[in-house]
Amino acid sequence: MSKALDGIRILDFTHVQSGPTCTQLLAWLGADVIKVEKAGVGDITRQQLRDIPDVDSLYFTMLNHNKRSITLDTKVPSGQAVLEKLIKRCDVLVENFAPGALDRMGFTWERIQALNPAMIVASVKGFGPGPYEDCKVYENVAQCTGGAASTTGFDDGLPLVTGAQIGDSGTGLNLALGIVAALYQRKTTGRGQKVLAAMQDGVLNLCRIKLRDQQRLARDGVMKEYPQYPHGQFGTAVPRAGNASGGGQPGTIVKCKGWETDPNAYLYFVAQAQVWEAICEVIGKPEWLTDPHFSSPATRLPRLTEIFSAVENWTKTLSKFEAMQRLSEHDIPCGPILSMEELMAEPSLRATGTIVEVEHPTRGPYLSVGNPIKMSDSSTEVTRSPLLGEHTDEVLAELGLTVSEVATLRADKAI
Ligand code: CAO
Image (cartoon, rainbow, N blue to C red; front, side, top):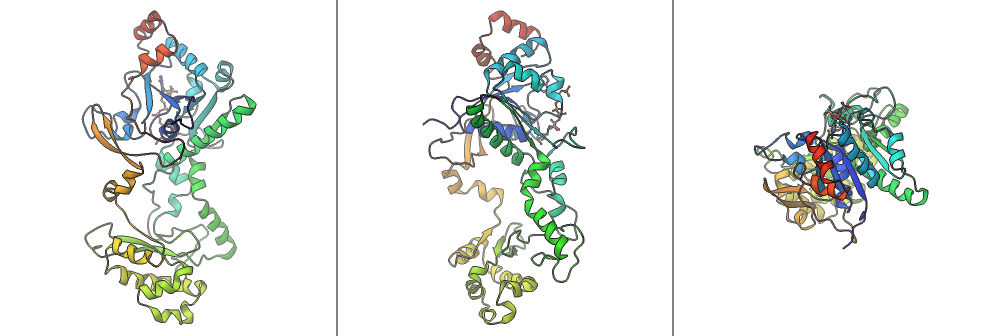
């Protein structure tokens, strides 16, 4: 089977998480991704959070599948000459260095354009143009500066970061989309372009419902689906809403059987208006059907605590899976809180390739998250991440380097 991005060559200058997420996705879509790493060092994540001594970490392997790795010191002249050849040969350069690093290396946008006017130069940065554009940024900084932390957690607690890597992986996905769009536009213009995905922008984009709520709060002074209503206080900024639903249907997390000892014996329950009748029947509150205090979504809003407590009295008698089964029979939206341990063991996720087992020469088999995008005419076969510099000779040969040029690179410690 052919792949969507067959024939596209990516010069992958990415490291850590955000950029590698982007280039891994492009590789899964069929692009030839050549990861350039510092000679002798490599992507810093190869060594971070190692679980087996001297073996590439899961952090690295899980973000760099289906790529080739070459080592190259791009600050010495012989290394820079190779980089020039790579720029001429590739379609896209992807990087997520600290701001200005590519320029300091001597590869400005103008120079890259002169070398290859069709090249797309795609970057992840922490911030877009503005007061913070020169700052280095990691995941949680982006979550804090993009609006996620101030709106995550409970009213009486600290701002919280979430385990979902919305700043890094989320921004990597944005960049991948920008690259694919730029490749498409190049078909008509023949020109490359710069693509920028800023982590603050990416997080804010994912927090758009909170910007919606900020404007509702400014207008009305209150938001009736928030846990602060009706007894708590609203300030001027959108408060943390705990586990309240961010949409028009109220929801929360309720305890299930075993919650006293199992930290994940919980279920997300949505009190969807369309199935209110079924909810009342299932949780044993048929009297609410005729009670005017509960008859409409609007009259229910000040009583959400009472409603969810009745739901919980019922869910506490069942395991989260039993509760989901019973609720689903009545089309009541809900979802068990699944741990990583449970997700790892879920057969349907293995069957679809969402979780894959990969064989690695020094690590042995490990699990990874596969391509979340499924295409009928461009399948994904996840292959292991490359060892450091595993493809250096192969790529240099493709670039047509002579034996003496390769010897110079070795003498310069550039590869
Ligand atoms: N050969 C020679 N030098 C190389 C090289 C190579 N192959 N690859 C990288 N380098 C150099 C860079 O040119 C840079 O040199 P200068 O500082 O002299 O310009 C240096 O290595 C370090 O790069 P860096 O500043 O990007 O790395 P860092 O570890 O200090 O910072 C990070 C890491 C992530 C904070 C920073 O890269 C960043 O802010 N990136 C943008 C935002 C981003 O993607 N953050 C998410 C990271 S995932 O959590």
